Image (cartoon, rainbow, N blue to C red; front, side, top):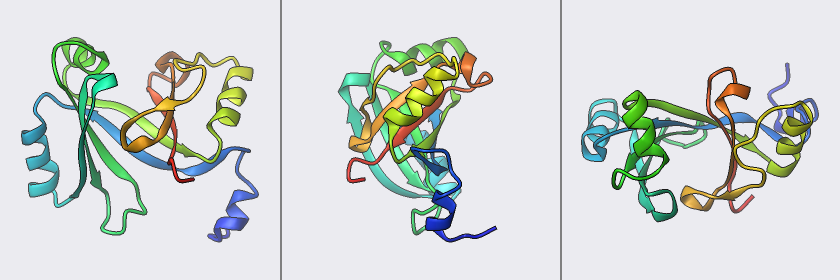
Length: 154
């Protein structure tokens, strides 16, 4: 199989990019989690920011030094309110979601909608790092919360 990006894009479903953008992990304590992923596992901390609309603090750590292999996204609640706080309260810290890159989120969402999948977001919204994001319900993702995302500069 060809590794040429142009050749690969011709076999992917319309609107998709064909790679994992990041893996989201819900954490109770951001400092402790950064110490694990950066200081012990050697991942480079690329960004630490707050997303007030989601009531979370987010850290992005590169999975390789070039950034081409995606990121680990740590998600810590800023208070006892919001989706991440509720997730941790119900399930404890751990794997929250997997995010797939899209060239066109609307096209991917429409294809999922037509396939009968349940969408948590009917249209994209802005998330951390200014990315456009939308989520599919875990019941439609085999028990996995799936995020579709697109970089703002794409």
